[in-house]
Image (cartoon, rainbow, N blue to C red; front, side, top):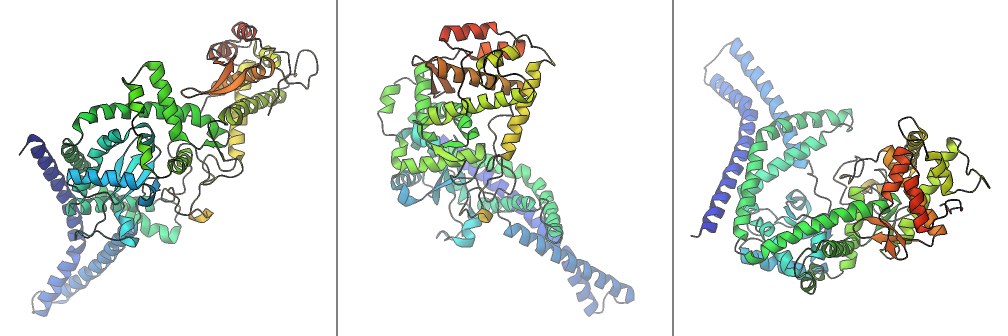
Length: 557
């Protein structure tokens, strides 16, 4: 037996030992629950045989019987609550076999090489990660069971959608090998039972959350309290069991595509870097405008290509791109990309489950005009509205009703420091942004789809009524940051209207100002000098270099 086989065997045995420890905790809890009933049986049996006779023992027998009935009733109620609780599953996009026969074939061949059961289904997650997710609690209610006698369905393989677009087929297979290998331990009856027990406890705690009403809430709260006690006793064993399962799966996968796994892991890190930049700098501005980019996964390829070009990453990059991309394993990659993109928008920003007024898809060709230009003009209009509110005239000369960049520069010049007009303007803009976001339907958690809103099989329907987003990308912007963004937007509008500039898209940095076809990335510093220090000279020099007329009117949204 090789060292890999020995390591895998040791990991599997350790996982099974931890699973048995979890099941013993369940058994002890059950033993405690039936102990009063067992004692009542003994006392009544002794009384029937003439032992322990007398009024005192009769009182003891009936008291113990009453306690036993109460304890058994409570035990049944807790057990039913745990059994009926629905553990939350990760929000994913299902991938049916008819929509990806080549992907299913690849994973099944991989499972055969590893000697483990194939996953029961596949799904996509809008993140750079892949895992197995046991959804037995749903399958036992409405789906077929496996034919291996264990009564469990195999777990679902969840694949990070950026991997499919960025990785080549061989790289994806190498990355998925240790994940698919985890179906082996998952098929063990003790491990499967231990996982169901822990998931049931966790779901019972979630069901006991406030807001269920007094009649239903009190029993659920008690069941949640009991489940919390049991889960606290199980926590260390469960964590160690999962670590052992992962170690055993990793050891088993060592024999599959070993030479390719190192380079594939490098691509995982690269994909994560590009995905993070794309979400925070490209997608987030669009989401704030009520638009969701419909091809995020295709965009990550462009972002990573640009990142590799700038930083000279990934030797043999051009040769690698000539190989078959993993998204070719899907029958309709565009449809899958759109579904994953909408789910990403809901997870990381919030919004309704379907497109509608104020929440529409946008493709990359439309992004500069539909997102960048519109964002600049919306922020510029908000800036002038706040200036109107604080009583600042539209311009030092000319028509006061015409919005100009000169009005902003004149107001902020010489006003740096705490308590100055810059700070007052920042507070006003922050309040205006918060007010407009609160009034916008479908954002910030008010537009979630679900059974009550008519959505069918919403992947977020098990995550409760809490507000979206579940995973915010960035902390709230400060008033100074918002003011700087709004001033920069006003400068960009003036550059477009008076200097022939154009809105653009940088795959790594998001909205960009193009002057003579080249991106100008040097605007942030002079804007901060004006906003934070009240010094207009750096910005005035920049405007003169680009040819922007600050006294000319600017078109607002």
